Amino acid sequence: MSGILAYGTAVPRRRIAGTEIRAVWGNLAESFLDLLSIGERAVLGPDEDTLTLAVAAGRACLERAAAGMAAGGAAKAGGGADGAAGVGGAAGLGIGAVLLGTGTSPYATKAAAEVLKDALDIPPGALACDVQCAERSGSAALTLARGLVESGVVQRALVVAADTPNRHVAPGQVVEYVAGAGACALLVGRAAGLAELGPWRTHSWDQNDYFRVEGERFIQSGAGFYGWVANWGLLDHVVPAVSDYFAATATGPSDYAKFVVPQKTGVRALMTMGKCGLDMMQVLPYVLTQMIGDAGAAQSFLALAHILDWAEAGELVGVADYGSGAGCDVWSLRTTEALAASRDGAGTVLSQIEDKLMVDYATMLKLEQKLIRPAGQLSNFY
Image (spheres, rainbow, N blue to C red):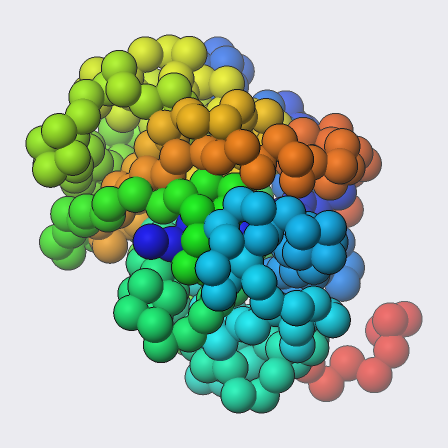
């Protein structure tokens, strides 16, 4: 058995409206903003990147975990060795592994997870590892963490899904309308915790829809243009993965109270929802793209955190997480009585989304460093 003991999220405060981008480039028909559910998307601050967002989400997660254990919540939820551990900051949480799932690490070779581990004051004896698997990097990291926990190698593992695709989309690309950023952290342990993790299945083969090669900053489309073809790997992987999951678990769409689906745009959610036999109310209330854009590897995790902010005990929640050229992971979890008891009314995904500061296109270009100045520049004045 393994479950989610605590979670935390981070969403950049700054946003830009899709209409602001269209006013500059005019590269998308105005009707498409509604058709694709394009509203606003996150913009990085001057001191934000994948790692800083990961640290913020991880810190929120560990603070919740420590508070819950201090109050005896974890012992009631899980019991046994996992629920009985003492507290005292990250060192008292028994974390044996830190896995950072991201496709946009600020380092080409250095392990960003090691920086994350140090920033969170997690003891040096904990394993730290980056997991790169496109947008499903978070799900891949969670799968590895579950294996470490359930096999008894570690008592608890911290999984952080964090991405900044907005920094890796060239000005004028259509994806610029939705490329956002964000992070979500999950503390996994040998207990049901807030939500017990269910089975896991995957479906994948190489298919170039989006990619970024070594040495290049900006993401490319394998087809060279956007539209249905840019999503060609989506249904080829998600539909068989979800069908296989239903068959393997002897469940069907109606068994799930809520379901997270890929949501680079609102259209993606509609496409997968219909093809997988899911109902509108199981999916659409948890699609965040129109408010924050696409947070890459963190997008499905942020949607899941949004569900956990409001879910009732005993609900079965499904997650289908697709990564470009990397396939689809499908897994589930069942919420417990401890979930409601863990809420303090603060730090919800929705509260972070609503706390926003709108910026114009020029400010976005500056903050996301889309205009690269010479490395040897000595002054801002010349």
